Image (cartoon, rainbow, N blue to C red; front, side, top):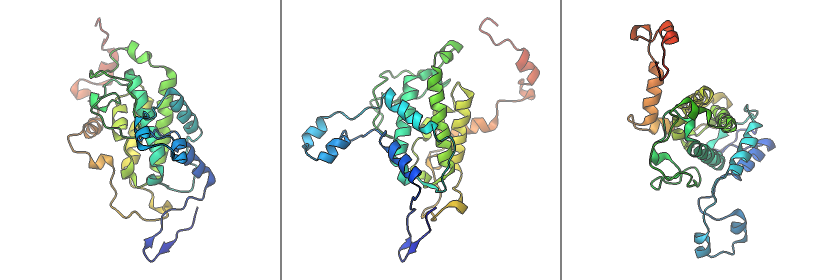
Length: 273
């Protein structure tokens, strides 16, 4: 780990001295959608006029982009670095992850038992581009969700595993990071609490838990200059994330409310019952 240094103006920023961590940030940054529509090559050449840059459509996330991101994240199931991640240095990788999660949710609505609001969809005309440019994969305003076991089983296993891989990495990153107010995928994690796959729902809850947990001070190179806060803390009490977390905290009921183990086992909850 790089040494802690200070100056007359305060504590210097974190210095990343692990080449593997530097390389990981760079590789993930390359997968982030560019909301300006200016490619890296065009920006390097500097030869395009402003009009030409505006006419070029912004790059859209694709199946290949998501596959490349998941393939990279699969290599890092655990945080292997000494450094705590400063999320200000992870903005582009987080944009790539946010865009991939949104892409998977919008193209596979049956991942969820409770559908996303239309305004959260990347295809909604009223939704601003956050976390990277988002594709127009859905133009309907109807809330889509899994309504049957057939709907749940229609989701490809590869899609479910991709979501798990992304959430595992996010959970480890959030556990070993600071400046967590930068994290902007609270809505996606909140939506995934309603996932039909219990592993996905559990990983989403774990990610939210680690987001809301203060950083590990004993591993930090420098103190934060502001009070600890995240997107969860800044959400209004009426927001969906607070309602869902409160519902999970309350539990589903007990024997006194007619939900005892025996009753749940023997009750016929089929369509014909």
